[in-house]
Image (tube, rainbow, N blue to C red; front, side, top):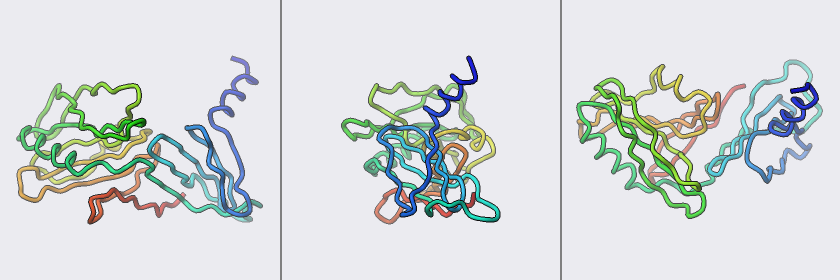
Length: 213
């Protein structure tokens, strides 16, 4: 591949734009990634069927760039996963005790319907689970990647960090499944960023977007 062709391919797939002085960026019509140069530094914009994110990559040291200001933004553009999916996975995790198990909340981009997909365990213990990915339909996307920690507390391990790196999903861990009050850890995985999440009082997903470049 020639250098000219390579540059064209890169720019077509990862375009670069500047932030208007108003600080209002017109969102792209197509899905994918775009880099945005703003007053504060370089941002990366990510658009998927269920997520819009505009997050800082690098700050500018010294004189600011002559462009508009940019605020970090994260929007979950899909409807919320129904509460019964969380209950279904808890029941699934209880049945898998004393071992871990894995599942996925799958969202249909056309019908906006949700389903829990079981990821069949290939090798499971109280400390890990290896699984086969569940098949998905043409209009479906994996939004929530969830696994249990059996009787242990919910947390993201170094193995989880390695597995999640580069992904676009919500990662969830359900722990202490053998108790009346299991623990739940959530985070948004946006490529190289892990942003803390929680379920609010209504059961809706909420993301914390105070990030530092």
